[in-house]
Image 1 (tube, rainbow, N blue to C red):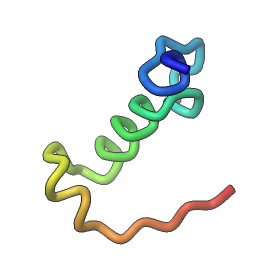
Image 2: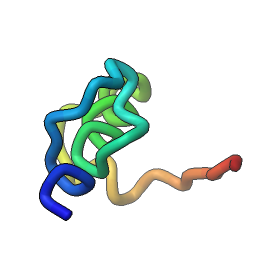
Image 3: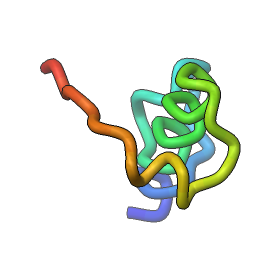
Length: 46
């Protein structure tokens, strides 16, 4: 469970853990503050 939430994982793209995915999506959208990022509308594709 801790690997899914915080890692570490073998995947460099942040798709195997929750925190890694959050960091990557914040970096790609240009936000560095979590409060600002929470106000952004997101579309999730699967």
